[in-house]
Amino acid sequence: MDKFVITGGNKLCGEVTVGGAKNAALPLITASLLVRGQSRIFNVQPLTDIRTICRLLNILGAECSVGDDMVIVDTSGLKNYEAPYKLVKTMRASIYVLGPLLAHFGRARISLPGGCAWGPRPVNLHIEGMRKLGAEVALEGGYIIARARRLRGANIDLDFPSVGATGNILMAAVAAKGETVINNAAREPDISALAEFLQKMGARIEGIGTSTLHIQGVDELHSCDFNNIPDRIEAGTFMVASAITAGDVKLNHCRPDHCQAALQKLQIAGCDIEQGVDWVRVRRDGDIQPVNVTTEVYPGYPTDLQAQWIALMSLAKGTSWVIETIYKDRFTHVAELARLGAEITMKDSTAMVKGVGKLKGAPVMSTDIRASASLILAGLAAEGRTDVTRIYHIDRGYYRIEDKLVQLGADIHRERDE
Ligand code: UD1
Image (cartoon, rainbow, N blue to C red; front, side, top):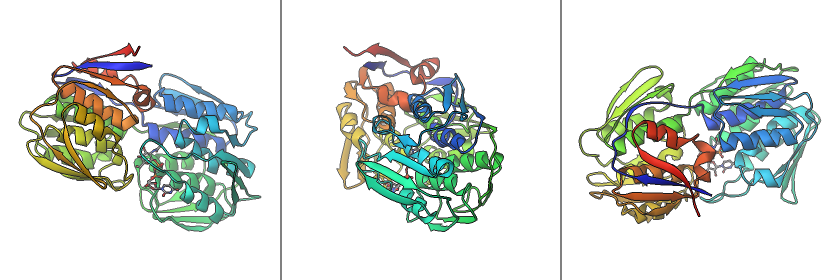
């Protein structure tokens, strides 16, 4: 296993290019299962999670290849409808094949994703959605077993605007007979990108970007190419990297309009922000001001940037509160940040973060993608050496993050963890 060795204290300065969004690319790749032939998706980073979803598509009989910045899916040989346990257990987003497989084969057999490091992550909304579209769904032997002769449009009111459930239902509904309305749909840019890809395939969707999606099922969809959107969470992570090191970083090839909640918080925390359509510059000279954050669905402050915010607030001039409303137990980074000297007190889903004058390097362990990012950020700002172990978590969602950080002046390298 690899680890990162960081010597903290360098201010990050310069320019960095943001890669394609992981969370948007995953459903774009599985949506390719809805058509026969070749789809090309550009601006996709060769991340571990992208390789995992491609492995799954290959098991299904499609040919899916990952290039430096694109994924090509050829579905000519698609023949299986089972997503096995051994792959689904490594990546929950494998559930994104449910809708497309049901639409394509009228059948799907998907291992139940189960929980993850930060608690249970149910899929009831995905299952209820498929049932509403006319599928029979049973849970047997740890698998979701779904069947439908022909999916038919329905009115679906989501209890919560789940990103995954909205995406799955959308992919199934475009091929269903008649009209589907998804109320309380997720408005994340990842869902809008998916809807636009489906439209390019010939789907009829209205209300993109709003919480009500109207879908008219069509009989045939065709393959096409699509440009993935930039990763707003990678962007947010680099913004916080600049802020936490009193740096001056310009992010290129990003979408500041997708990052407004984080940018507003950074400004209140004392950063200067300049932005254009596809770039943003974040710099900090003065103290870090304490700023409270509550995670919310888009366009609110994202849960995927909560851990990074706690790292930043650990060095603020005062106390702040960080409330997690999406995944209430998502705080595995707190104990690790404490090893660097952070003072964080937990009560239910609220972290009270008392800013300390400085953090000091220590060995810490990654537990999930975003928690790992927060440990790297804290290590960059800490005095002395920080070793971050189990970095396979970070490789799932950030492509060679150390190279991008070194380019900005950080002292970080990858080593084999003996
Ligand atoms: C996606 C992101 C993840 C991010 C999350 C919230 C991907 C691959 N992952 O995950 O990085 O943290 O959005 O922005 O895109 N829920 C249910 N039942 C369901 C589905 C969800 O109760 O069937 C609940 C979850 O437990 C959670 C909330 O809804 O409390 C949000 O989950 P959801 O939006 O579905 O997250 P994911 O799509 O899994």
